[in-house]
View 1: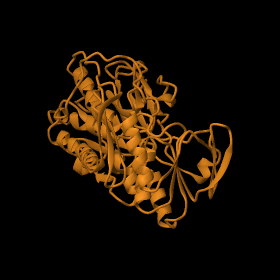
View 2: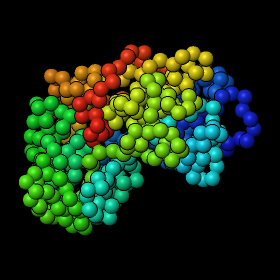
View 3: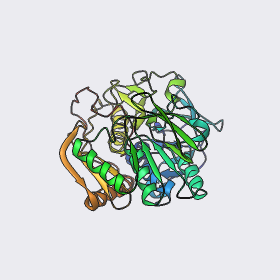
View 4: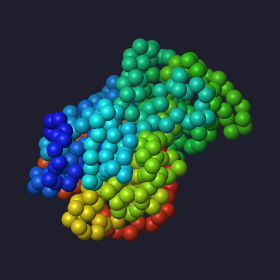
Length: 409
């Protein structure tokens, strides 16, 4: 990983800028490493933090049961230059990324991998002032500090019945906290019936109070107000209120004049190339190929990142890039440190019959989390080692559960 200052001299190799150092961006940058070593490209990775965030472990970091970051030197190719800064605008006409520091980076090819972050539903009053909108490192850090100053018996409300909410509720309850989980619809809507039943039973065994088919209308300093399907309102005690009700994406593409879908994901074709500029390629949670995005997840990001790099490399060689094809194999959620539910899926991310739970599920879930870091390090050492499933036509339908954007695995 090269962190030397940017040179103003005109480079002889194509300049590639990767915006975002999450799973997709880091894998894309690493896959380009061989081209850098061969003198065929130079790569700058722009990220607002100096460390890599292992996002699928954020719930562990917030609750004090695990680590969710790594030094970039351990996961990012040595030939990639890390730029610790925030991209504020892409000057598409000039081929330049403007940074919060006032500097700018010129590019010949750009990979847009800005990821996603927590989203606060606009229908919840007071959430910005009194809630923790979970989804990124900074909020996880704030929540960790808050929990350190509150008694375990003080009531905690987790808002959102997707995978993020389930993992937070289970982790908090296993640590001895009094936890309530409020779901707008059913618990774990992306799961099949059996997997949902196991998750519900395990959460209750951990002591989590589950309130399904209710929405949260307001969050105050020490209460939450919930509304049932009949419209009846209840005000419940809640010293800690955590929102895990879905993800949004940064506005960078929109403010840069690039076309996006309704929530701000970059609109691209099936090779992940922006429909506005062939020099810009999307990857991860913030891209919508043909307007039909994949489920926001680590599972998709670790396939989209390498494919984005392959698209760029194909164009540098003067070849036509292949269409994207992401294969989903399962959805999984941890239930504390000793339990998990893994729902097998068909390729299109719809539930299959296979369900693995209990300690076996927990062991497999842990293996999944570790394997993500292993794949980053393998791609760092051997660019091109990450499997590619591109080249197959995909059915342009939104898979079941994909619009909820509530899972992080």
